[in-house]
Length: 115
Image (cartoon, rainbow, N blue to C red; front, side, top):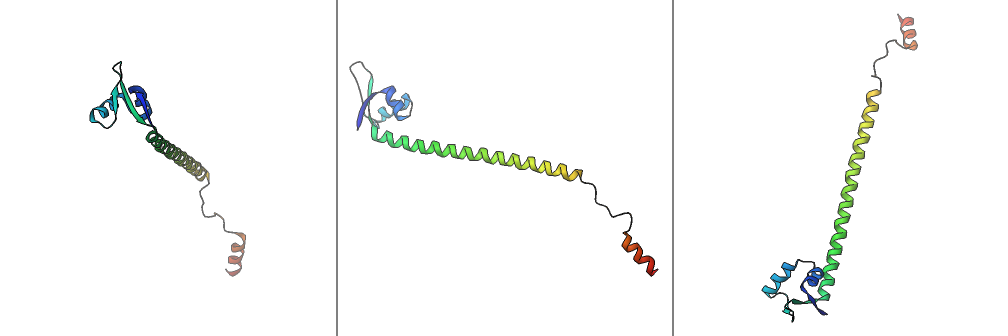
């Protein structure tokens, strides 16, 4: 269904600038006529604008999904780094494992009996 609109309204409906509409009128890609007061009246196909809005809605939702996933990735990276720091702080607090200074009683008894 084709609707006649003034230049500004057509630009809003089509999602382009007024200058963009004027250039399309000059190129002949949009049908338009001047009304009695000298203003441009543009023929806008409502069906094509609905399809364009559907595409932009899908694109916007895809962009939002990508942005959300990027934020989640950043959050998970930060959490992973935070947990690495916690683990490092705990491992630095562990006492150094060293060989026991005294031999166990079992081995010392065993050596005395043999020796």
